[in-house]
Length: 239
Image (cartoon, helix red, strand yellow):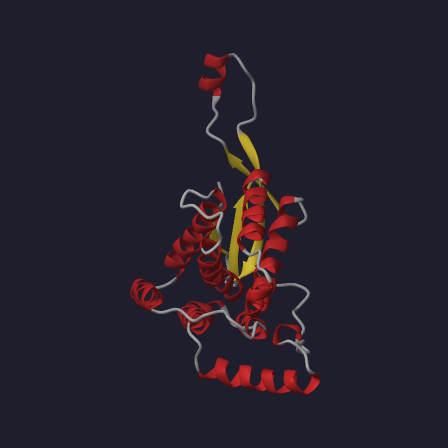
């Protein structure tokens, strides 16, 4: 079962699970985010979500962290069943920056709505259920990382209104990621709810940023999601 917990320095969240947990989630994300040409305004958000999916897939391949967790077996069970088995399971994990994870969680809401419009949708669809459980784990982790009043306000606002990810300036998430990385633990604790608001709702900073990106994109005749900023992430992140 996938679990999500904030990292020690609140820089991001650590997603943990076994190979099959991650394999199921990766397949679900790819399935839910499949779009056709008529949905091209969602391509930028889709690419961004799939970048997180890429990290999860590599975690499943053992390219990130390996953990050992108790599996509920103990000597009495082994004795009664006359078997000798490990008392721990191997879990894999990967850290994702909080702004990136929040955008992914919110964007998946809209991809689910698009998915529901397809002919093959039904309410017991396994892929959609897998995605919603993943989102619930993220929100539950966010609840533990925010002050109670901040979390309640965020949830009440997001249930009433949420920004569409159509033609989203995904480079804005890079700016938020880098700002968050360079904060102290205390600053992150004080600012996480603000970052959550910025991602869920388009504020004046985002609007000004997108206007600038669109201006440049129109000059070089490039889709907005293909615009690259000269930004560099640190080689090592203190999670």
